[in-house]
Amino acid sequence: MATRIRLARRGRKKAARFEIVIADSRAPRDGKFIEKIGTYNPQTVPATIVIDDEKAMKWLMVGAQPSETVRRMLHYKGLMFRKHLQLGVNKGAITQEAADAKMVSWKEAKDLKIEGHISKISSDKQQAAKERMAAEAKVKEARTEAIRKKQEEEAKANEPVAEATEEAPEATSTEETTENAGE
Image (cartoon, rainbow, N blue to C red; front, top):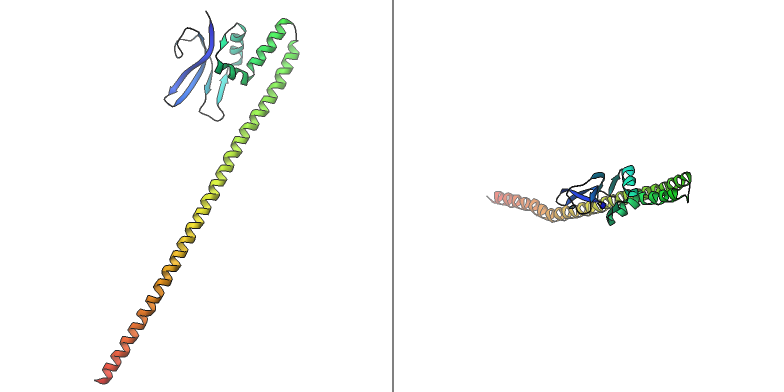
């Protein structure tokens, strides 16, 4: 029986999650599987990959073939490099201590790279938020300035009307006084 390490889709429409499973190569994608060794969630940034290293190594060493996508995930997690080193140990080309030292140094470098990527994403988000806030502040200032100018224009437009109405009662009062005087 040819075994494959592949993805089985789970989750609802447009919110896919995947399980990393060991399955017979003839079984359907979401069908029967032998063992679940991890999960993959592409919805997060960066994508979340959780793999049981020991189970994955066990299946890789007995000959299970990963699909292309799972091969990239295993490479990302360092399991393909670990398999390569273990094959060297099995053949006697390298000692187990040297292989473990190489794996540790590779893992540290990879973790630093991932941490840098995650911090870059978070700083980019914070920078974008600051830029949005600055743009909103500019729009708010422009609106308040426009409202202030409109109020000033209305006040200027209302001032001559107010003066005219004030003069008009005075004129009528003088007319009334002249009329009263003539009587």
